[in-house]
Image (cartoon, rainbow, N blue to C red; front, side, top):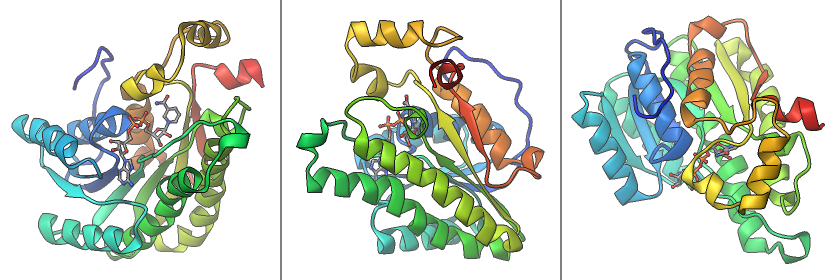
Length: 261
Ligand SMILES: NC(=O)c1ccc[n+]([C@@H]2O[C@H](COP(=O)([O-])OP(=O)(O)OC[C@H]3O[C@@H](n4cnc5c(N)ncnc54)[C@H](O)[C@@H]3O)[C@@H](O)[C@H]2O)c1
């Protein structure tokens, strides 16, 4: 596994077909790597074709059973056909789904435009309904499954210029609970991870030095998280180790929200 963080890894996902959206980089790629290390077979969804191809080629070169699917999760038909292709290609139904893809804009309220907020909700909120619709019948056929949705501490604590993002990520929590209730009879669990500030290129580049310093000062663990530290939570939720956990949200933020809320 890449990165500085080392974990003891079991084979909790041996042979399981796992869909990870937004898997070309950042947290999604770390989740794909972690699931593969746990024996999972990985279907990587993303819109960035070149980046996705490079990421999946890197996984395959390390002997990982991974395939690339260029699919915009904001488009229902694209999602449905990608899930059909996954079952065909792997010869087995999907057992794990991680909704990680995001398209985000942080704007002052007065500048929020229809196109940006529409795209943000299409990818990060409506897209989850399309992936759940496509995944649930496959999971039901294999006798159950686990779905993990990425929310954010922005759903819990107020940050400036984040009305759209906060609404989207709070929506993910509501959707997670509603889907958990509805899909329980099919043996499908649906849970959410609520990450704080994770050190991905996209996240850190957004902030100036003063903001980064102030944020670190308000975090009990006094550091940003690593993508691999979110991937380890995802692996727990994806696996049978969490089999009595349903409709829950696990906050992984170094204590940021308990200290500032
Ligand atoms: N990085 C953080 O600090 C942080 C904090 C809290 C929550 N999160 C959440 O974790 C998840 C991953 O964050 P990240 O920082 O790794 O993001 P990122 O921006 O680095 O990666 C997101 C990936 O999603 C892909 N994507 C965008 N639109 C898509 C679409 N329509 N269909 C399919 N794929 C699409 C992008 O191409 C990209 O590869 C997101 O849901 C994010 O909101 C991140």
